[in-house]
Amino acid sequence: MYTGDTPPSFAPVGMSDHDQETAGETSGPSKEDMDHDESNTAKNQTADDTKAPSYTDLVRGQGNSYNLDVNLSLDVNSHVSDTARALSLGDLAKVGVSQTSDGAAPFKDDKAPNMSDLDPRGISETGSRSWNFWNKVNNECDRSETESRSLENLIRKWGRASWNAEQANRNGLDEKTEEIFQLKKMKYTLLEETRAQKKEFYLLKAEKIKYDKENEERKLHLEDERLRLEAEKLRIEAKKEQSKIRQEEKRLRLEDEKIKLAKKEFDERIMMMDMSVLSEMQRLYFERLQKEIMMKYNHQDKQL
Image (tube, rainbow, N blue to C red; front, side, top):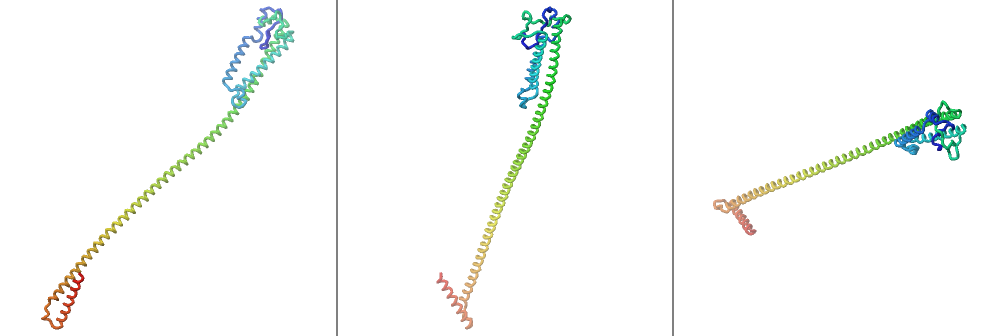
C-alpha cells in the first residue's frame, strides 16, 4: 500500500527478485536511511526546541532566532515532501502506473515490486523510465533541500539580525537604565550627604548653644560671686565705720567726762576759795561765780 509518506519502490512486472534487489541497491535511499534521517531531524528539532524560546516569543521580541528557523525549516521540508509526492504521481502516470481510489498501486497480487530486485544491466525501457523518475526525484529533492537550506540561512540571518537588533535595543535600555540608576544613586548620595551635613550643622549648633549657655551661666555665677564679695566688702566697711563711730563716740564721751571732771574740779576750787584775802572786786566776782555754780548744781538735781 502506498501511503504518501515516502516514494514507493516499484519495477516493471516480470522482473526477477534478484533484478529487483540489484536495482534497489543502486537506486535512491532505502527506507532505513530515510527513517534514520527523520529520527535525526526529530532529535535536532527537539534539541533546538530545548535551546531556544518559541516562535511566538521570537515574534513578540522575547526570544532568539532558533525556534523560528526550526519551525520554518519544518514548513519547507513539508513543502519538499509535497513536491516530491506530486512529482512521483506525475511520473507514475507517465510510465503507465496509476493509483487506485484507496491509494494502492495496481500491481500484480496487490504487491508492489521491490527496487532491490532490479538489475541495472538488464533494465528494460520501462525500467529506464523508472530509473529516470528516481533520478528526477533525487534531483528535485536535492534542489528543494538546497533551496530550503538557502531559505533557512536567510531566515537564520534575519532571525540573528532581529536578535542582534533586540540585543542592541536591550543593551541601549540597559545603558539607559544604568545611567538612570547612577543618576538616582548620585541624587540619593547627595541627599544623604546633605542630611549628614545638616545633622552635623545642627549638632555643632546645639554644641554652640550649650557652650554659650555654659558661658552665660559661668558669667552669671561670676557676677553673683562679685556681687556677694561687694556686699561682703560693704558689710565689712560698714562694720569698720560703725567701729570707728563707736570709738569716736567713746572718745567724745571720755572727752566730755574729762571736761566735766575738769569743770567740776574748777567749780570745787572756786567754791573752796578763800575770799578774805581777795580784793573787793575779786571777791564780788568769785561770789557771783559761786552763786552760778550752786544754781547749776541745783538745776541738775532737779532734772535727776
